[in-house]
Length: 176
Image (tube, rainbow, N blue to C red; front, side, top):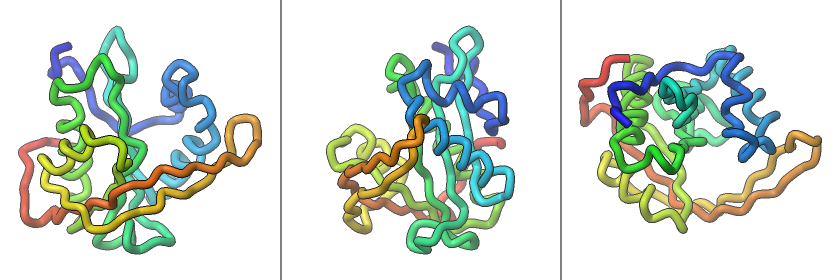
């Protein structure tokens, strides 16, 4: 893959089915629709990385406001989540580039801090975030739930590290 052949852009309604990654994440169908509605109302941003001939190869969501202000408060702090790169496209700079695009967009929206949670059993992701300037600020129990594509409530338990980055101390050369 040549990273310059990848296009990073905001999600549109026609992209929702592709977020399921050929059925692997079908159970998040309703969740994706809810996030898209939040994006349409200005409360979230959904990004995808698209490669001609391969389709969707990455995704990243940003929550601008949340009931948990330590994650996203709608003014200064935003929350990155749902960040995935397909396995065949990892370790080629795409994840770093997607994060830079999202961070630059947050700077243009005048956010000064960004948070994310990384599963405690995902040291590769934690290393990437630390390389990008994120620091662990808290432990997260990682307990949440959602309604799957069949209408069933699913409970999730993913113990995580909450990480944070000050967007004002760094600048990026990424153009959004």
